[in-house]
Amino acid sequence: MMAVELKSFWENQNVAIIFFRRWGCMLCRLWAKELSEIAPVLNKHNVKLIGIGVEEAGSKDFINGKYFDGDLYYVDNISTYQLLGFKRFNVVTIITSLFWKQSRDAIFKGRGMGLGGDFKGDWVQTGGAVLVGKGGNLLRHFTQTGPGDHLSNKDILKHFGLENEYNPETMANKNPEEKECTTEAKP
Image 1: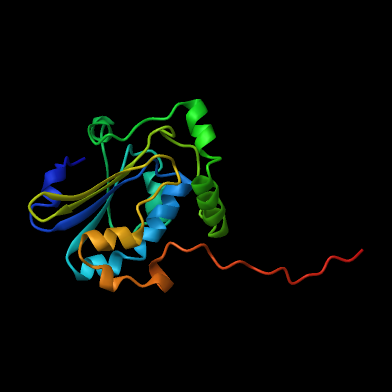
Image 2: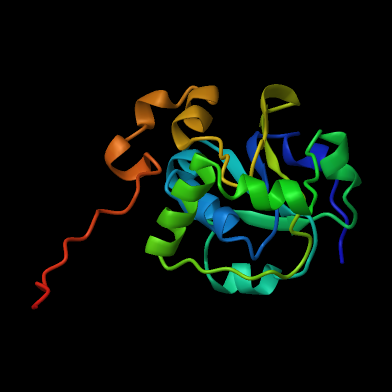
């Protein structure tokens, strides 16, 4: 295992670093899929997209599922998450947070996309994101308030001055098209 210092990511380029809660978390997989929608724009403008997990558990499934179009790493302990102000839930708060509207919407969307998930690893840690300009200029520090709380693609592009590249048809973190039921119920 090779250790990498966070500051090495932004020494020579802009970087969007996403701190995922847990590799097996369906809501994290959803965020990863949504971020992949803007990966080509970020790459074109030399903005590195990096995902970091709180542990190795579940990382192989995350990689094999091709949820994220960026480089992936994990921390060897949660001190990095703590230093960035990413809080930990307890059993009551994590269960309660799953009933929040943003969580319910994200769960519905993730299920509609067939993302699935598992309960491997640390399921009470929150995550977030840091957007950093070349040389270390902090552009945005985002802390999740709940598991369904994600920094939007539009906001990420805006912080790198790429808002003109934003396409709401393909990058808006939209819910999948609602499907109509084509079979009538017969009495």
